[in-house]
Image (cartoon, rainbow, N blue to C red; front, side):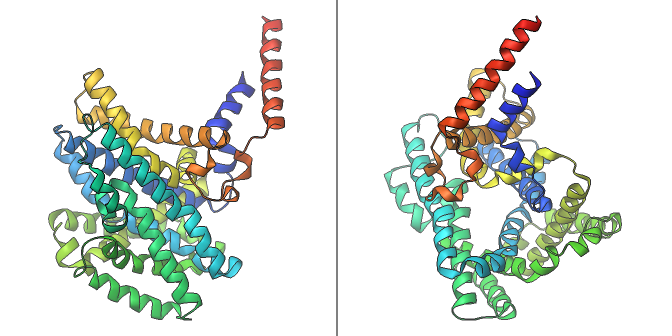
Length: 381
């Protein structure tokens, strides 16, 4: 039975790859950021459904809001120079198209279509005009805007770095200017591009330090934690009392976001050093696909819990919905990919880890092993 359990854990969660000791802190960071993002999206679903939400849940959402998306863009920027030197600018842009823009376009169409079909039950106001928002107003399409923004930021950064030969400091200056311009051009995909470009650039700037293992002992130290903790607490306290700074004083808001990112990275390095909370690594490994799937799954779960089971306490709903939506997203992704549906997530099959693609020989071998285990247990009984 133990072998059977290991098989199903591997089948549904891809544990062998998700827990490999790559740069574990990266998966921890993606896992934490993804959970915080899912928390926000689920809470928004509760609000749209007219469910009463305790003020503490709303305040927690605002606190997490300051740093979770900047952290995603910083992490993406950390690896851009290495990827560029390894693959070249044309191939790297092609990869970004295959792994970001393609699933964005596909899943926007899928999600909008489902929301129109089930409009009687959803709390999203969708019409056929919503398809135009895919290119003109991604912000209006729930969580999907992130994929489009990351694609745009990545491609522009790659071109400026490889073809215009702009050094990192010039890129950072451009990023700071673009960040300010986001307050002027504050609508549509241009706003997301301008707003997150400096965080992506910052990721590239600090990459040589974050990827240098000789510093990992410092990054994971309790001393650094104790230094960052008061800054994190004070900055979040200030933000909760002055939430308007996100729009009125974006550079103070950026400082708060960066303090939050630094604190989260310290926690991630500590977790990686101690190899604790392994499930966060699994979540981080699957973060992009959870991001795509979790909103629809969370919606279905809320309907089941609220309309069928009569559970309307948002604290209870959140405690159930958040982990279950993430777990089901991982399971659905692995089932789809293992059964040949990789094209729902990437345009090129090579972008999916080959260990997920089960051929007939491997499938037959696994079934035979399970059958042997079952027969062995019957004999023992």
